[in-house]
Length: 140
Image (cartoon, helix red, strand yellow):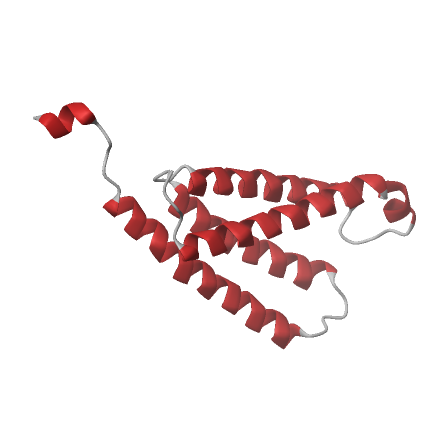
């Protein structure tokens, strides 16, 4: 197996970190469900559980797709980046009161989105430069 480009490796680490974060959120929402319900946290623990599961499934699918050089990976990556940003801001604007450090959140969100776009260029270039390894075709 050939070595992955540095940008793709960074992208895998970013997706792996977000997947680990969602796994921790899922475990916490299940382990502390009674306490979260008792104190009427916002959002409801079931919303946290559902969004964490979606994040875990998406993250694992992305890691597998990047690792296997699947053609659909770029579309899923960009869709996940936009979806994660929309989810984050929806949760922040609806359930979080007060909203401290909004400028910092905007800057980090834009930086991470630019990082994903920067790294995703390697996925497209890699997809187009990939050649099938079929000995029968090479002999013709």
